[in-house]
Image (cartoon, rainbow, N blue to C red; front, side):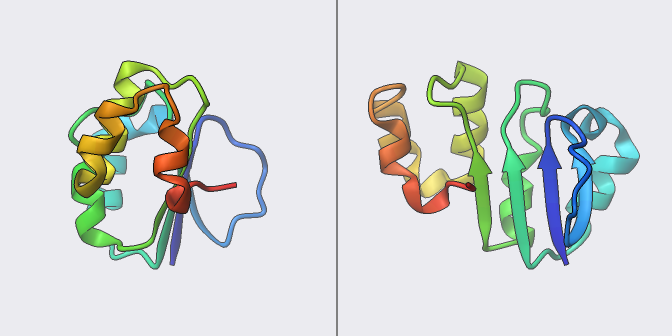
Length: 109
């Protein structure tokens, strides 16, 4: 099953579960997201996503794609580092300076 985490409900169609980023602050949503093995996860990064949540998501799914603004905030950068710890050094080095080029294989279009 696929998981879609987006800033707002765009009406789908989604092939799996859809969660709005603001609901990730609720305990039930967190536990459901973290207790399920996902085939693919698609995340639209947003400052409303709690820190230290996404790092556990990479354990439950190996196919994670993100949608991020070109000029991402420092919190969005932290979230990217949680999702892709193997690319943390590159992302911190190139923050807002060709960052998206360094993680282009992980971009959700």
